[in-house]
Length: 210
Ligand code: GLN
Image (cartoon, rainbow, N blue to C red; front, top):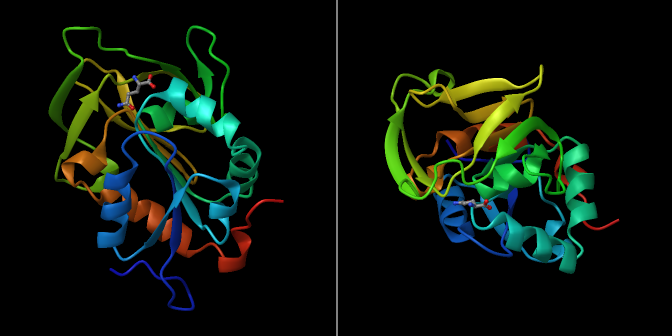
């Protein structure tokens, strides 16, 4: 399936690229037929019809988002309803609440996240997860110093849990978030949902800086 909008043009997806694992998202999106653009400055958001917030270090990312004055334009785009996929640190950026009292950054997703939820012994691990919303084949999930979701609001659909019941993937309308890194395992199904939603956004709705 090529990721094209109504006019047949490739769908432009902004990948926040101030820090972290953005390159893998860019190549996965390209392999799915999208038109990914690395976002480091507000003007890179022009024409964007969907967003990816990658994994990395959310403390560094929040600083860089402030330094490059990306917060307001990102919030404006998200509030306009464009779809977004946040992975790991990207999920932390989207959370309405962060345990421990860190200031939320782009608080559109009605969840509370717990950062670095797996302790030292388990800094990273991989596992196969059932994600019924994506079909029968399990998702190979790579967790790296990963958060978990400690609370979900009433509009949040739980997409995946670990065997111990902790929540690791959710959806709230056009907002998708995973505690793990689908892009590091070549798992395309979350990105495909993002592209399908983005293809419905009119090309001129993705506005740049206002
Ligand atoms: N531990 C990181 C944080 O709290 C997230 C790790 C990741 O994105 N792989 O920001």
